[in-house]
Length: 392
Image (cartoon, rainbow, N blue to C red; front, side, top):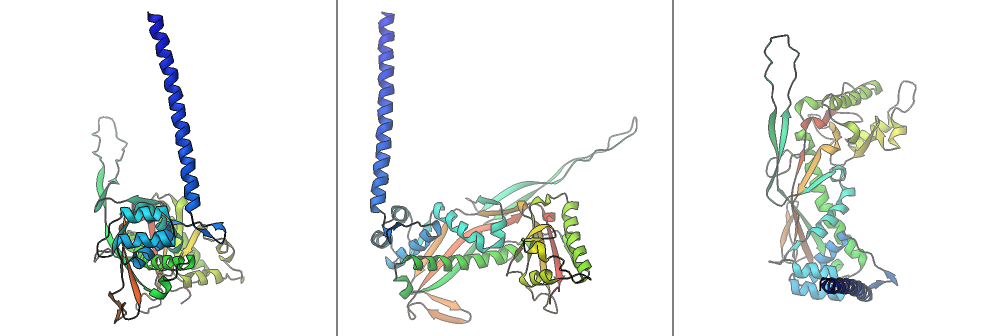
């Protein structure tokens, strides 16, 4: 009897394995059919498969909303006709639309941020970008360490201990507003998608870079590098001769090392005027001091980057600028997972001091909003050289 039960159990086990194998084969076949259907539905561009990145998808989403009258239903109909993109249509159907507003899901947000990286220095250099699902993120932070002592026989051991603090990141709202010609938007070509994408990216990138560099943290703005730096790490050049320049850059490196900061990720961030001055600086023999290594993208042994958002008109003489020396592995960007896009053909917007009606000039206004914050783990991971008049 036991042998019969075992035989039945073995047969059932073999049958179960065969069924699982068949199910797997069926699933694989379904996947192949799904892919074939997707390929058949994919629109062709000049006989070639069209490759579309996430930033273009954001632009197409905006265009679909505009041409669909600001409603999900209209946007879906336009997207189906113009693009036939299943992912775009799925995102439109799953989104929320109120008065023309739209929530772009994390897939598209991350792809758009990737497009912004080459456009902005700070975001490109920041290695730690974390999702912010609440209004605040709090990092426990150790601000002091224990100390050991040598003592004599029978002596009391001095008291020591640890000290702690907090690094608080609070979501800051950043908004950008782009007026776009309706004649342009009526064109359904890929090049127009890229133009819409570029306009959105430019508007967001410029605001972000400005504040991540020099925001003072007031009026709901992020605090940038200039105001995160410890006051003892703000220095001034002693002059503009090649020896003064070398000594000033060397002192900045010394301050980072003195603070026990890992300089392997350190970079320079300079203004265009400073770059030109350093590239053309010569020593007493008439030889270029930094030109050769700057042609390789380095300054004083570290990578350097040029930002057009470092002012060159600071100080009472309006001729000063700043140089930043930063350990980039200390930088943090915390950002909300969603990007909000609003579109309107009737809104009025301000250009300088003038009010412009989008309806009158046949434009569509695209407003983009993100929420994020910027921080530095240790204030002494930054050195700022201010009052720099090199090349002025």
